[in-house]
Length: 325
Image (tube, rainbow, N blue to C red; front, side, top):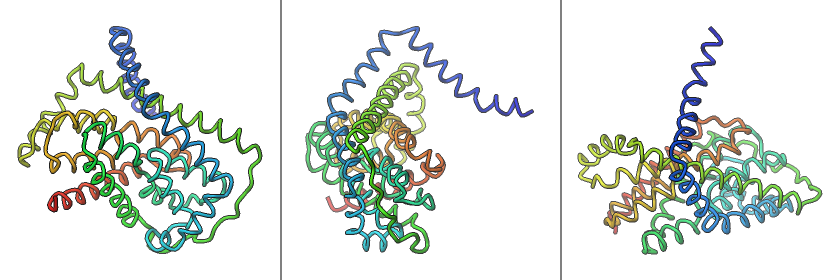
């Protein structure tokens, strides 16, 4: 009985993995090119921005900068989120650097005894955001050719994260005292090795999910899933053309945003969709974040709950903003 239960758990993912292997074998040219395109996107757009942020945020933390910045932000952090003051630093770095730096810093702080395990998933509710370089530069300027939409999306996205932190905050202030800062030897070599490993994790996930998106398009799964979503969009008097970009964005954020930008729709339609995708992050970013959060005891259920809540709150803010536009 126990063996059957174990088999029922591992059989579905095993079949899925086997299917993707078959896709690679039967059409290697198509999917090798898909992975190549994803890696080129990573090398040209993600790696140059993310690697120095990984390195300097790690170095800043190990030198005690996070400890000091956390102290400076202790009062607003305690007042808004009822969390340890050091979380103010994590929130700031998450906003500045983007996914998955917030999740990585949660693990770094915990590993350096600067953050307790208690309620750490609640801290993750507001320390998981996209960065201004991606939102303003990549999305606003490069994809939509409109700096305003990047600014509006970033404002709604950050405010949504703040509201999400308030929603999931503990009922009372806990663990408000700082833990003693611990000095670490071989700081530079530790920062380099840790940053290289972390950025390779990100590149690996981007490459894999780029291929997954193309496989799902080729076997018509995206088209099939778009049908019921299109019916819902029609009932809401929204264009059905946004169904496929939304579905792709729920898998891989950059791909979905790119497809959304190619539709040429009004900002009042695009902005809520864009903000929702940014705040949810997509399955690819979720996997990147859970690379760090799983070891802290944060379950998939709680992580997806906080990300869904953040997306809903951000979309509501975007809808309010659209009334004003």
